Image 1: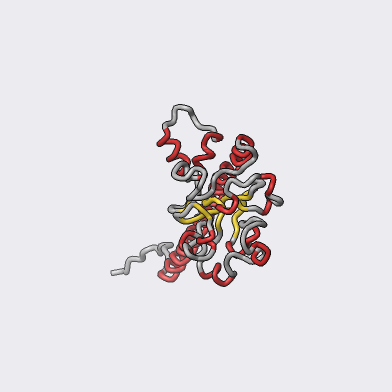
Image 2 (image 1 turned 30 degrees about the vertical axis):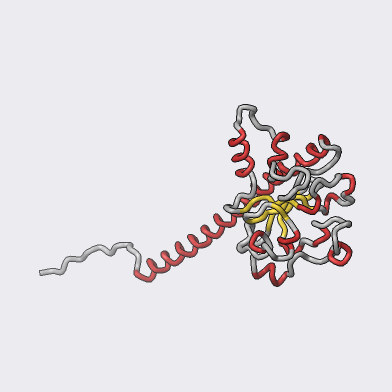
Length: 226
């Protein structure tokens, strides 16, 4: 009886199959990283767009209030207890339907800020109600900055007393950086160690001359708490 000859098939060998799986795994990993980076870049761009929008309202507010900036402090001797949120004072200058209720306006204002959960736009308390004419270099004067939970950039925050709001909060919202808005209207992501006290304080602030060129946090600490 003759043995039956079966035709050879073109199937994969075990080694070929393992190599194919390895290649697929590598490609999947690369794709996940690429998608993650694209999403992070999109969120950062969206955050910058939101901040740029609010920044555009600031000179409009000043024009209607004798050239003075909005309130940017939690405790305000002029109007304490009302409209503590800086963005709420800017709402009248936003393009919003008249049919929106006060609650809806508030919700909209809170939603259109930093894109990362728990992060908001903190306002620089050192320039609260300051006349815009006294700001000598608007392109270097910070008005808004990403902050976690807190929404007022105060001396306590800068001194580390509320470090979890900014300095020592980790991770930062945008690849180790925060979005920063300046009084001239431009917005950019920055590492905290690239921000000096001179970008926040005003010349009449206590200790300005000795601090103006000093970063608000060291590079080492900044990298540690990215």
